[in-house]
Every structure is written in structure tokens, then in C-alpha cells.
Length: 216
Length: 323
Image (cartoon, rainbow over all chains, first blue to last red; front, top):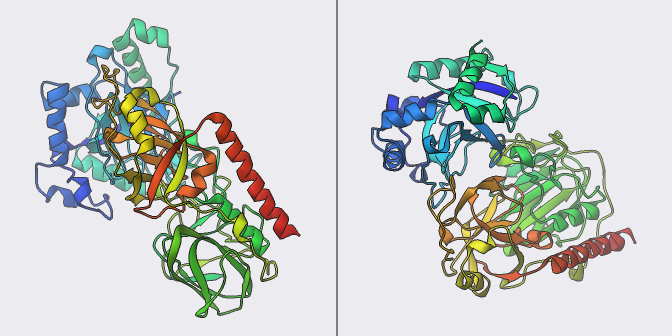
């Protein structure tokens, strides 16, 4: 299996907020520039508050928990290439949040979602029932197979892959997006062997070794 | 070549679909009413799995660059060649420069426009079908737009005047009846909800497309109380995320059943009470918004009989057109 470093812009930290999606239609989310100007408190903020209520004492604690340990791809699907992500920590440390009761009819591509105990990356624009927390500049599905790291197959993730979040800021987002478009970007990735028994014996130690393999 | 003068609402290139990639979230796609699509291809002398056009609710306007045989099946939207009405479920000729347009919708929801030679867009993952959500396949991965020029395969086609008689065509009754095999998370419903789901007359909601058909108007479904399993989410309609079969009926919040169709999402976190049987999936493709619909309980034996009946119907169409 593979482990990936996944760079993502989380809404809270940088004030990029998603407007309620059922009342507007974007032609493209690519113009993330415009979103800052749309003002502050809306969907994502509300969703962070929801999380506080359920899981974490503060937004900062939520982000630390969200990005502090690796995630396991338990299933690929919903839409093309979308990874369902399972937090690789003991159950008592896992975050749980509510899902939408009426699914959104629209979600920007590459939104970071979270519902129940599962995270996801929305590979394409479309409906969704998970709450929205951030956005990544790194495509995970490319039907044209022009993206450098999607030329073998149009979907990146397979069940069993492992992903580690790396928060980035707005400049990082723009720079990676430009690199992706120019064909200069490859995600940090390493081949690893995951041993469930070892993981269950020592969660943090196993995760640390996975990270070492990724950064080696 | 075929020039799209007007595209209609959501005209797409489809064939019989792209099996084999659902496990990574790429659905089968293909014609929603497969029987109508097969019949249209047979009428013009194409292989049954040739690519054709599927148009919901209204037809496109198409200009031909050479002589072809054309057939239109499915919904009752009469085709016109240079303004002259042509019969449905019947092959007819078009010449170079002719304009194919359509009358308004009288019954059903989707027409299938087969053209001899087939729509010759590239094969992607084994199919020419459009999966618009994933921008995959078909013409540029999207619904058609005015000005598009579609490549056609070679083939002057079968003779004109070949027809599929009335008794070999299949359209929904009124109210529509969709047979459903209870299963999957059926045990989550209360006895009252299990009854009301089949007793109530539902109506097709405006949110009805190739991904799924939503229904509303029945009594809300209630759930057997339980402590939600870890990771499922807080609502009783939530489950630990699982795979969604084609035809499965999910009921977010217990209010509006959604039956997944050819461009289905392949998994998620809402309970599914059962599955529309494969023999009735074609009928969903012919439901207009607001169509009253009854769900009818069905067991495996009846579902398999229905599938066999549908195969016999197809064989009868093949035999009729081969004669």
C-alpha cells in the first residue's frame, strides 16, 4: 500500500469559507480568490462550531486532531475516485460529526469532507452529505489523465492507502495549484507495509514509523 | 457527422454502459431505458450496444452531413424531418442537410435517437457512455451543447419503415408501479413504516436525473430506535457508510426515498430499505416529475421471473426485426 502526504487548506485557519452551497452555484471553485471577499461566517464556520459541540473543545483542537494522525482509505467510491478515510487512532480519540440530513446538491471539487467518523476528499463537483472543512489543490481524479501522477489510472486512491494531512496556507495552495497545472507537482508518496497487529499494539508508534517512511 | 443545432435539456451520448469500475466510484452509466436503446439500435441496423443519444423531456435539433437511417424510441416525442412528422419506434431515412427536430413531450420522459453507424466518440474504459458527474466518456464528458459536431461511424443502415409494434414496447403504467425487493437495512424501519412505504402513492420529485430519482408525498418513514453504531452519524437514517447497489432506495431523514440509477453514487451513509428490481429500472427512466408512483413488494423468485420476461420481450423484438 501507499502513504501520501496530502496538502490542504483548512477553512478556519485562513478565513476561506464556503458559502452555503444550496443557495449559490459556482462555475468554478478554482477562483478561490473570490471567496475571501464573500465575507466571514458561513457554512464552514458553522460546521466547525458543530464539531466543537460534538467532539473537540476548540477549533484549534479539532484541527490538531484532524491533521495529527494518518487516515486509512477504507473504501473508494460515492463518486469517481473519492476516498473514504478512517482515522488511525483509538476509537476514543476519533472525531465524530453529524452528516447532512438533506444532502447538498452541490459541493466544490476537492473539498475536504467529514461525516460520521469518516473523512473524504470530494473528487468531483456534485452532491454531498458530509460537512465541509477545507480544500486541497491536489486533484485525485482526472478523466483526461493529464495530471502527471494520474497517467496510469484516472483514480489515485485504492482501499488500503494511507493519507496524512498537511495544512497549507493560501500561498501554498496557489503555488501547488500552479505546479499541478504546469505538470510539475507530484505528491509525496512512499510504499509502506501496514501491520494491523502492530498498529493495535502501538498506535502512535506505528503511525510514527509510517510518517518516517513517508519523510525518508 | 452530425451537427447539434439545439441540444435539448440534457442530451448525452450513451450505450449499454461501462461495467467494471463501480468499486472505484465510476458507475455503469449507459441508457436509463436500456430496452428502448437496444430497440432503437436494432431498428437502424446497428449492434444493440452502439452509442446513441438519450434526451430527457425534449428532443434536440440535429443536422445531418450525409444520408443515414434514424429511429427514435422511448418517450412519446414525435420526430420531425424538415418539419414533417415521422413515426416513433420506426426507422426512417434522412438525407444530407436534413434537420431532425422534435415535437413536444406527450408521454414518458426519455427518447433514444439511434443513427446508423452509431455515434463514434472515443471508447473510454470500454464504453462510449457519458458519465457527466465525472466528466468521463461520451462527447467531451458532458451533455451536448449547440454547435457540437458528433462523429458518426460508417453505415447507411437498415431500410426505412421497420417498426417495433405496440405490444413489444414497454412504458410505465399510471400510476407507475415499481417492484422493490425489501432488504439491506429494511430491519431499521418500524412495522408502520414498512406498510406505509408500500401503501402510499409517491410522486417523482423534480430532483430526478441519471444519478437517481427522488420521490416525495408519502408519509415520513419512522425507524426502530437504536443506539447509533460508532461512525454512523446521529440521525436514525444514517448508517456506517456502505456500498449502494444500483436501484437501491435510500431515505435520508426518513422523508424522501431516492432510487439510484445508471449514474449512481456507489456508496455512502444513508440506510437503504431495498432495491428496485433490475427488470423495472428501465421504467424509472420514463418517469416525468410529478408522476404518481407506487412501490410494490417483490421477492427474489418474482424478480427473477420479471428479468426472464424482460429478456423474452427483447428476444421478441429481435425476432420481429430479424424476420
